Length: 320
Image 1 (cartoon, rainbow, N blue to C red):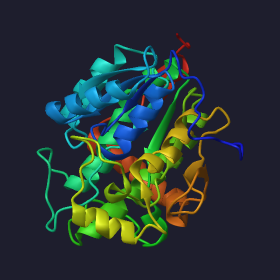
Image 2 (cartoon, one colour; image 1 turned 180 degrees about the horizontal axis):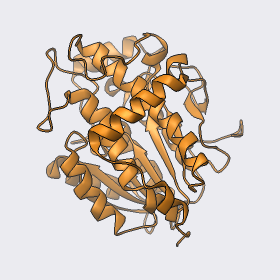
Image 3 (tube, rainbow, N blue to C red; image 1 turned 90 degrees about the vertical axis):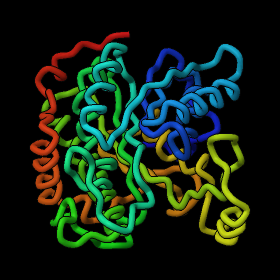
């Protein structure tokens, strides 16, 4: 069980550890990458824009103390299964991998339903299918490092009771439903993954974390990374009692990823639900429903054609 005295500003020494973070060019992914590297880790920052990734990498490198941590970049678009497989093939060559933060996602869905080149609803493809496939593709590398995967959920799943029956929202699309339902799926898959990994004796744990209500207007200005308008700052600061910065929003994600006392199947979030220090929380009931989890897992496995290599991963020896 995780301790009560965790200090998100003083992480364990992560020297020699390697982590891959999706969606690293801004927001939670950027600050998670910065926090990991600042604790001595080597971080593979990923995103779909070469220019934005380069800007984010340079920003992290400027912020690092001399001789502490390191970063590299890797192109990865989680909405595109071909991109996922290509990036995973590159990352596998750098194993062991000690942690995988499945952070990338669309937070503000389009008003009308859109599909990816693979033919899938865009929000579900980006937030769910790509991460399910990436975790499977990197499972052996994670097993080599006795690592963790952390899926990013949302407090919205406890507020809106959407159960993913129309999984890709063919008949009942709305922007908010697309987002919440994708986070129900993400959390459900993250919890289910840990059960399956344990059952198969794979030395990898799966956890879920959510950032509370973290906004750009409550986050410090960083050129090319976080540059909210004056109106955004004004509006977000009106909600200061229930919001926090993206930097603090990354705290539960990082704790789930690196706290030595955290265990697979746990769910982390801010102490005040929407804001505050990171602690163990309780996921929404729908995300703990085994029937929902089994249905989602089967759908993702068949849709991505990515069965996880449990047997091979269970036989992988630790390296590095």
